[in-house]
Length: 216
Ligand code: CDP
Ligand code: CDP
Image 1: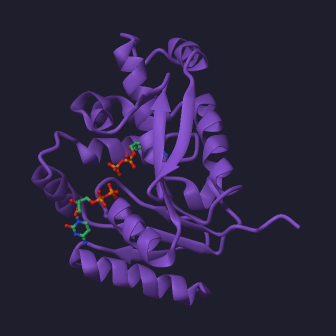
Image 2: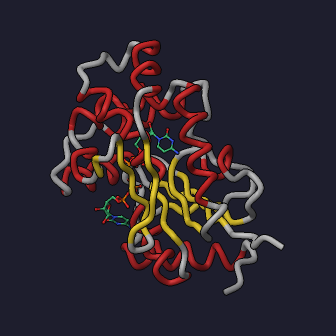
């Protein structure tokens, strides 16, 4: 019989604390942490690299059809490579921050990347963070968290990291798009991290998972 793997889904707006919590849960629960946003960022980076207008859907899709996208795992964290180039820090650039929501609003882009995201669950127990993990990627998992924080707090966190990122604009685009918008998935426990420390947020997430029936 093939093994059944478990998925923890974490969604929420930019800089709410999703990656931080997902990494810590992955370490303590022995899961692979998958950063789905990195995949949308990687495609956007390659589009920009090729000088393609991210607003031009047909051109983006044509470029994507030529990309060799490899999703992997290293040290229990997801990795992403395009055309054999492993992408890390470059996908956090201001240009990618500015254009990623546009690229992520294209349904065909989402379809391809969602399929790759689901493939992880064929091989690993995962904690995956993004915008539509509980609503679209793994709608059947009972383990759904939604991490939020006020707009001011999130903007301040990004500024502290030294990133140029208009989080409010990106959130508005991510929440208002037609294809898989950011929303609280049915059955999610919502954690507001505005007034929580990092440890406090991780602890709240752990307690929420137990409430949802998680057993080690
Ligand atoms: O780290 P941060 O929350 O700022 O963003 P991210 O998770 O790296 O995601 C970057 C962008 O990818 C988001 O603003 C969305 O436009 C898109 N995204 C998405 O549409 N669906 C996902 N599951 C994850 C990210
Ligand atoms: O993945 P996402 O964009 O949702 O957020 P993140 O990258 O995990 O967190 C954004 C920043 O906020 C990081 O620098 C975290 O260390 C920080 N953070 C915080 O100061 N307090 C929290 N309760 C959660 C995150």
